[in-house]
Length: 260
Image (tube, rainbow, N blue to C red):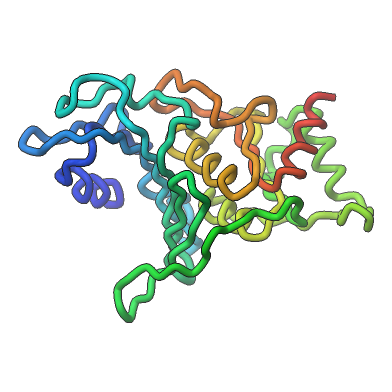
């Protein structure tokens, strides 16, 4: 349902030359009667959908690039879609929770708009969001601990140790919806981790890259643990990558544990 809603809202406006979705194996073409534009849309129509029946916060994630191939007015291509996150012109998400919020960046800071149902409009409620330099929460699926590499295991042990000077121990917060976990981290700081072990889960184009741009625009960092997410060159539409993002001091500390 969410996939169909996004597609039908975006297929006829004349701004897009092609779309790609986490829920679609191949490129999503713009129907023939409609004008082809200069932008490419990637989207995850319903992030955290396994949580729907438990009434847990979920969301929609989107990413926009400028096309890089073909003459104006022509169909978009795979080349247009397989661009690194550094080329994004806009990214954001809608979070469906106790309130509905649109959070986005057009590379000029990160801004949040809350839906006011009484007037049917999104009202600017969080202007120029800045992620704290350090946080006090970490977010990771600890059920995968047996498969983590030693650097990840050592870092999580470090966060659990008591040290008032560095604000440890950190508290654990893990929802299991990327939108929900990122939104909390964006506002309060700390670190979200979905490392490569046992294997990467999150998709580069629809989840990792847009969240990475938001993190960096808010003063945070986003990494695979070894390189910036925004510098990863996509090799396929559904490529998966490790994702570590959050406060710059926390992400840098994790990267240092991996280098050891």
